Length: 128
Image (tube, one colour):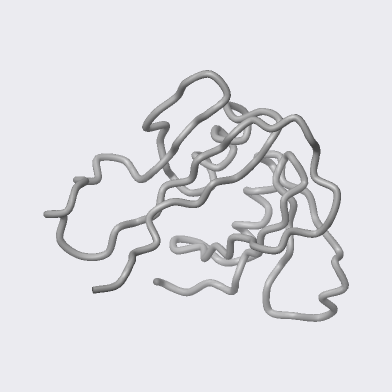
């Protein structure tokens, strides 16, 4: 038996605000919210051990007192599934993302920052 990747925890200053950004990016919805902690995941997805197929991971945003100071050691890679990469980058910029130059040079992916400065990559369009 092995483990499954089911949740990614992200430290942040504004859990509700960052959760709303990522809900818009991933077409997720808020699943649970309490003081300083918000969990989002795919809409209307059955849960539990009897769910067939892969389990899409949830994202949990937890309020922490310290701010981000260095490049992320872990980041999300996302794939646009219904539009081209450049269209998706424009959409994400309109949602509040910003371009990032972390020394990546000319690559097939685009590095962006979420509203709290966490790096993520928009990969070339493919249908996962």
